[in-house]
Length: 197
Image (tube, rainbow, N blue to C red; front, side, top):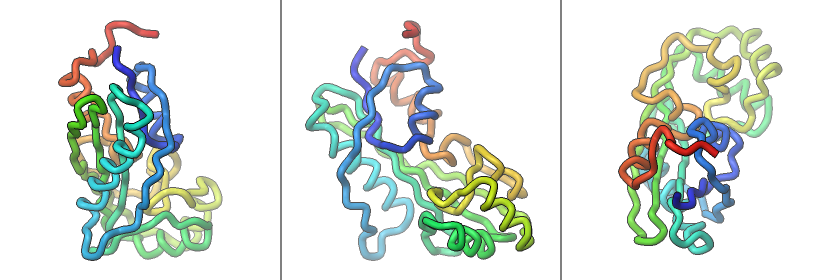
């Protein structure tokens, strides 16, 4: 089987990819993630997903390289990772009762040919009205300081929602596995794998 490389150091993405029971390596892409002027969330994540995959292609010739990037937008504004509990509480207070669209850019790069498939997979989360006490308790328990939108849907964050909508729930965590499996099958990788290691 061809080498598969995840161009990411995200533990969340690695955990998702492990679900597929495929051997893979990880590599840290060196990419400037600065948003370009007037670049919307969808364009940003697609550009960065491909840039991350291409950044590690030189050290993994012949591999299938997976790049991914995620951004969240609310009322036309791109949400960043809060970085600390205070900012996480502020971000959640601003999202209370609102809707956030998550854009997850996915790229599968064939390093041998240089051909890349790139897509933005959207997932929409509607928050219920949150009290200050609920926000404080949630941030203290789940510590979502490294997550865009200040929540972990795979953890207690699901308690903050009224509704979730999208074609692939794994996109919300940062790696759209449904689309990735389709692309891997098209690249000749059996999904589910016929040889389990």
